[in-house]
Image (cartoon, rainbow, N blue to C red; front, side, top):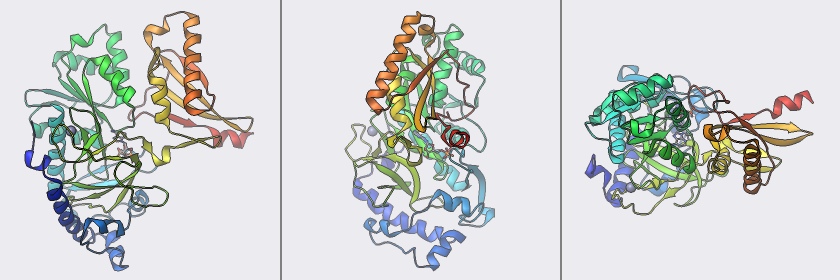
Length: 434
Ligand code: ADP
Ligand code: ZN
């Protein structure tokens, strides 16, 4: 049932002891890099005597990685590093991250542990529909699945018909897929006149981008499978940082490899378990690029309750979004995921949507572009008008702002190559024009 029983079920006391020792080890490794070496010189980094003292260490920001590009955070000589990855650059210039051989082994181990927890076993056929290249979702999962012993198909992104052909002919049992792409693939499956029963698919690992519980349920329903949430970021290794167990109530964060904190993103103050804030992480075993108190900008909370699966590592809740994702619409704070949660449950809503924000008479106005479910699309005009009104009413109740709703045919929104782009903010360009 466990991939690594000792590591996964370690007592909390043992875990804390291990974390304290590994944080101090990480500090001594990190200060060999130019960036942390300078902070040490300034007296900002000192060894800690208890986990309570972690809060005295300085934060590391994404901007620190950018400003010290490319080698400023490398903590050992280049001949020890064997691989570079980079973040997708969702929120600006990409940042580069380096790995030693041991870092890559640890990372593969974490993904093997994660997928095993969800039910992947030798004998399974695993199809990895993620970008192979600088993006960590490709090679990361690939080596994890091989380490676990699953037959791995590096199918990469795109070419939906070919993906489905592999699913069908190779009797694929598990996939790694972007949640936004999973819904798109479900529509292609239908176009190919195939039903979930024609496949042998049992589970999907979905992650790398924010998505709601409603979205997960839709994926599970459309493929008749279990979909497990997978979280990670390139700066820490990539995927394999936190992952759902069969109970699907939050993601176990592997605390023997990372030390998590939740902070108030405005004040930097550390918040107690259960309170929502920004996830901050210290790496415990990374060698090429150890990070102290890295600000992920991802908003979540720590769930500190025993899990029926028996693992002792605390869980984090589904990521609500990034702190820099928040939209301010006429002074009201709105997260894109709030919008997704509201629309995904409405019958007739299809697989893709886009939130556009415009200026109209100096006021902000949300334009929702929503693809309609193929079955619904062939229905009556009255049906479409009712759907439009249902969506508008639901959003008004949830957000307290009235959006304009545009219904589009299935496939009406161009699919993204990688992670879905959910928001297009047109306000600044429109302001300049008016
Ligand atoms: P970028 O920050 O440029 O997108 P990465 O490819 O490293 O680069 O992506 C990591 C980010 O992706 C995370 O910080 C988080 O915002 C998002 N992410 C990853 N997995 C999930 C998930 N399961 N749920 C929500 N967001 C996720
Ligand atoms: Zn569990």
